[in-house]
Length: 148
Image 1 (cartoon, one colour):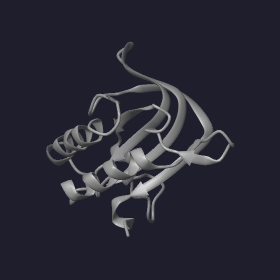
Image 2 (cartoon, rainbow, N blue to C red; image 1 turned 90 degrees about the horizontal axis):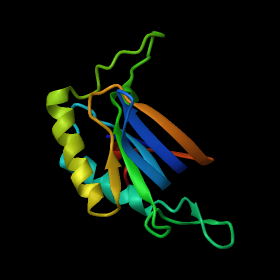
Image 3 (cartoon, rainbow, N blue to C red; image 1 turned 60 degrees about the horizontal axis):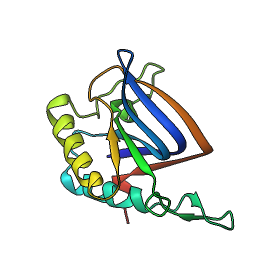
Image 4 (cartoon, one colour; image 1 turned 180 degrees about the vertical axis):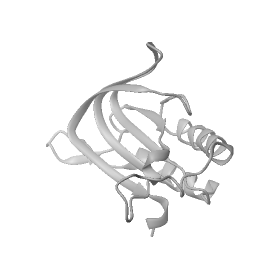
């Protein structure tokens, strides 16, 4: 399981010209799910993300988490995080989980992270437009395969 985590001033997610989700001061999280990901992978990232110390403290040091600053998460499913471009310029998505695996795993991940931090969701499998005001920018790539 992969997550791209971006620190944001605000983010708004729209589907078919309707605002679905909106957050202020928090994290925009793009979540990619691989065919063989398990709840263990989801639990790892759902524990890690809210604790990332990537917000400034009173001294301007990145010492605070989204929890510490009272922020929110906007969680967006994104199968393209498992794009394979080896030997080609046209990505294939052979490693990305199909809907039958990815949707229940996305829903599970969402339920776990919602227990930790206020979380808004994208719409799985839909064409989403996201207006975002990045803060920094500050972007972190996490992969459950790299946990130690």
